[in-house]
Image (cartoon, rainbow, N blue to C red; front, side, top):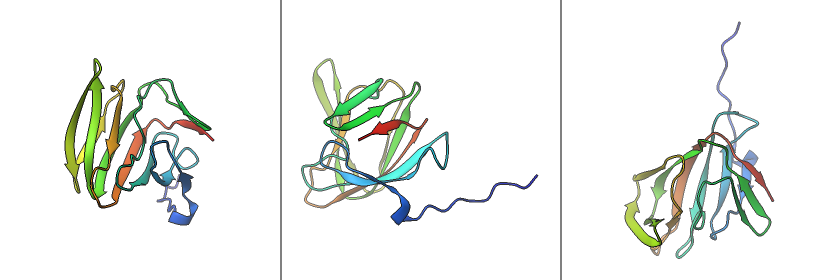
Length: 138
C-alpha cells in the first residue's frame, strides 16, 4: 500500500472567511482535506477582531454566520504580523494580555468567552489551527 503524499492547497483555493468582528481571511485546510483538523489565516485592521467575543459552545451565530462547534474543540492562534490583545471574561470581569508577532495563544476545550483585538495602527495577521473541524454556514 502506497504512503500518502502531501496535499497542496493554493491560496486561491482557500475558503473565503468574513467572521463577525470585522476580520477577514481564508481557511486553507478544512474537512475536504482533513477530517481531523483545520487551519487558515485571518487578518484584522485597527480596532477590529479576527473573531468577535465568543465561546466554543455548541453554536455561535451572528447574522447569517453560524458555526457549530464539536465536542472537545480546541484552537490555537499564532501572530505572524502586528500586535493586539487577547481578552477573556471570567465572572463578568475582562482580562487581557498583550500579544505581538511570534506570540501564540491556545484556547482549550470549554474556554471562557474571548476575543483577539487589534489595538495597534498596523494590520494584524493570525495563523490559526483547530480540531476537530467545525460546521459553518452562511
